[in-house]
Length: 300
Ligand code: COD
Image (cartoon, rainbow, N blue to C red; front, side, top):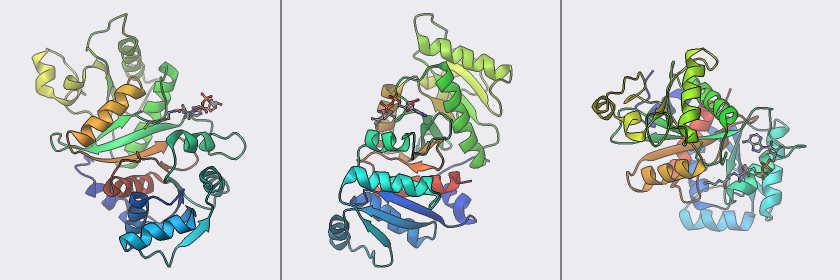
């Protein structure tokens, strides 16, 4: 299946059960707005944990009706996140969502060895973009969790992402491993890792996808550009997943797509006990709503 736009995510979750979502540090306007929309659409049943007064003020200011919702008062942000994570590790809910809290605070709680959401797998972040100038949805990983992944981490990040894409109906995802150039350069570690990942894929050490790299960004997303350089690749111009060399490149691409290209985005953390909606605080209500859709689609 080819995913053309965010609307396709809605079709994927349409036949699925309503999921219980816990919003940690819920006193955040865009998160609340998105959660309420997803609740009205029967995609989720939310639980809000945070500062009750803050939640009420935002709701009054924006005309949100939260009277039917379960609200747990915990004004201390770190305790609110801890309570939310524990609800998930105790299997009382299906999805965790970040509200008004810093990413690393939330992730440290998620990684807590006693009551966190570890599974033994590497956790990684994935962002799915709808860009007007590309013919299908394109995923980018890792732009928010793993800072400088090594080869072993990159294998796990690809596997996490490919599993999600399968769940979304993309049978054989095409993975482009990005570098600054498309030739292996022994001084550029990203190109060495890319070549190894491609070979591991060819030898079926990484399965159920087609990996090619190193590819420069233009070759990954434009067949014309790849042909111009004489690159023969099954992935070039038709990439489903872009693997980033590190968090800085990933984060800059994410923000460039959102701010310059006005792309739509949905983003979550994979590899934990449950999907985690983890968007940037500056992301729009729509981005948070689409991320909830993505997390519901990712539920087992
Ligand atoms: N998956 C599974 N386990 C992990 C992962 C992971 N991705 N990362 C760390 N761990 C485990 C380690 O094995 C270790 O047992 C424990 O967690 C602590 O590991 P540290 O000391 O390397 O990690 P922390 O706690 O200092 O930091 C983990 C973060 C995820 C918070 C850190 O990597 C981080 O800050 N990432 C960037 C988050 C961020 O600021 N993003 C903003 C961009 S929008």
